[in-house]
Length: 330
Length: 240
Image (cartoon, rainbow over all chains, first blue to last red; front, side, top):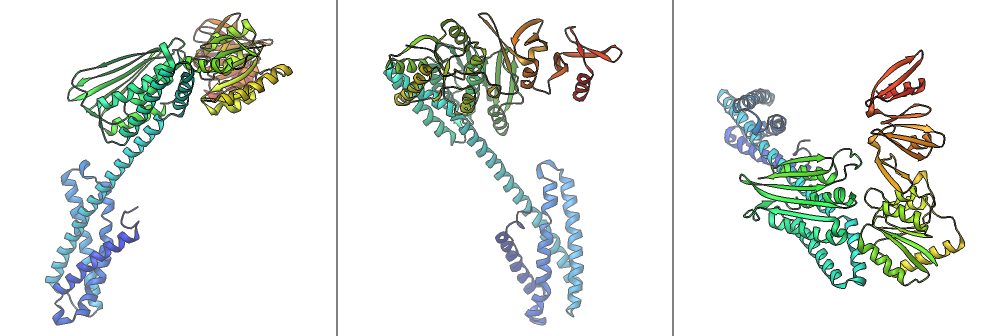
């Protein structure tokens, strides 16, 4: 749907702009001191308003030929051709309208109107490119917000919370000191995820801290079944990454990996420099007999979309006893 | 004295059950298990009246454990997931404890359990309705040993009276179940009943050959040959 036609207020504003233009043109070109203001305006305003609608049609070629994906020559040729053709038809209609009102335009004015028509159409093309750009930007932002919300929701997994609360409840009796630690860890984890969730980017070190508090909680629940190896290259902790980009991967590593192993296993997190960007790895042991999954799980699909929006790359290694996700982020 | 077993893969979760149970001296904990395998063995060995059973555990979940038990005890499910309540009801669980829970709620459950055990109420039961379909794993018991096999590893299944012989990578596993029951649980787009007495995994199938007049035989990738009946062949054709 055309963004201007879709909204009454916008259409009214657009037509008002054209009306002002039409009155100015009528007063300037039609010499009202000779033929009278009323005739000058009657002659020029209705055809201008009609042309206003004609110019809205620029939206369709603009959408069909995005600036970044079309050749300059093709762009100029097609829009110029459309401008000349539409303006030509418009001037002819204008001449007929003038004769109907009992007056003549004259050659000079016809030429002037033709040039005006071409320019107005081209202006409209430029205007529509602007509109299309705005709309795309809005789309991208909506997508980002959407992904972020989903990530946040996925990450506040209720079962994780309930199981952690159950651990706390249990430890209150047997080991109050650990219960206190766990409460603090959980609070820290929640605070960090709420804070980082609303940022555009966070430092790698913030993301790693979030992951660490998550893992510290799971360590209390899983005990020795969960083993951790973390390797972070020096000097890249300040690199900026999308928030909550590692967390869902680490959560999957536990939920779909370690939790299904009788004797548990290792979760490995790696971060190192890769050119101007970083390479992040999350690897976990998993059950070779795990049920086959149909399609990618939601968390991973979400991460894939977010990585691609960030102009990064993702690779998944799915082996019988090992699962690894690697991200390259600029 | 009511004997009970605690089954949970998380130590803090076992600890709180232990602690709460200590306030109810008419209950004795005879074993604690950290996974489903241990649970099946411990129940067979101790024959407890009551089992506190976690659901989400590695390899064998709570429902798998229950299915594997010949002599079923009374069961109280203890889990952080509320979505299994209906399945729990279908296997006649005494109650369903949602983590985390209070001592008061636990006392309620325990009172209910005590009444059920003392009254000699029927214990938990197998229920086809409680099994999640399509089946992803099959568990077998051979004396004390337990085998859990992902269904994609099965080549074919053969009916033998009230038992099924499940062939997976050259090994035979036996289970007390009818072929029809098992067929209803398996993914019908992958497991085809090619004969009154046989189900075959499509992924293990190499080819179907004519055998005699009007009869055919399915040849599997490992060379095994299985008779294919006429309606079985129709079903196969429909899927290939």
